[in-house]
Amino acid sequence: MRGSGIVGSVEDVLNASIEFPTLIFTAILAISAILWLLSLVGALDLELDATDGILDDALEPLNLSEVPATVLLTLFGLAGWFVCVLSSVFLLDGRSGTALVVISIVIGLVSAVAALVFLMWVAPKLASVFVTTTAPSKRDLLGRIAEVRSATVTDTAGRGEATWPDGTTSTVDLRTVSGTDVAPGELQRGDLALLVDWDEATDNFTVGHVPAELTDS
View 1 (cartoon, rainbow, N blue to C red):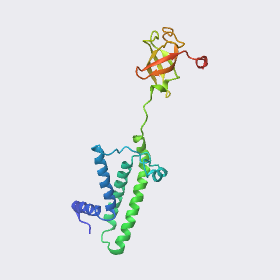
View 2 (view 1 turned 60 degrees about the horizontal axis):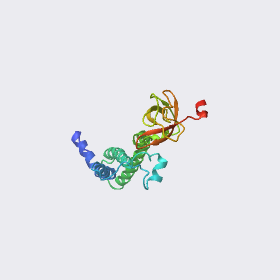
View 3 (view 1 turned 120 degrees about the vertical axis):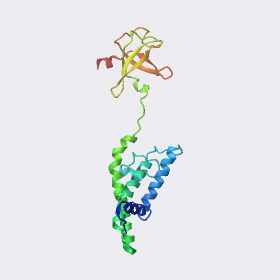
View 4 (view 1 turned 90 degrees about the vertical axis):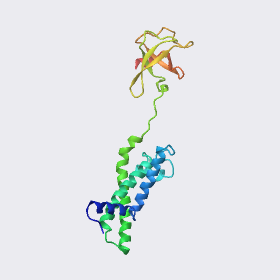
């Protein structure tokens, strides 16, 4: 029988949490807490996508694969626990025998379905938080045109402005190299140069003349 007042309500919730069917979701939350604790102490990497492993085939059709598996497990446990514990408190009071077993099973299944529906709703909203993007590499600028911003470009000095594929611009170091078609001092401020090579060690771009077909466009 449910208790009266706030104390009774808290006792009802606590009792329901350790009884079937809510006990299943309580266990899921306990496992989630252990996983998060291991993550905090560095013993476990929780930034893996849910698709890393045997969950791939099951989660991909549900659009849950972009969120880390531990986050999904935690949210599933929380949603299921909330639905299950409230249903148990109000629907199992005074039940016994076969009716208790049947209603408990139904509550457990309904809570699991409700938790899954909640996950399918919230996962797309969380996916953008966990998407990792690769930092652009200076090599992405090779083959693009830079406008000279320094007085001139030599084998020891020179600056220019180049445009990334996404439309943003960056200031880059430009250099001439012996054996190429651009002589030191040939390029002046405002000239266009083709970025033909990039030295990762010095972060300098080797420049060349811009082909006529590119300048015409």
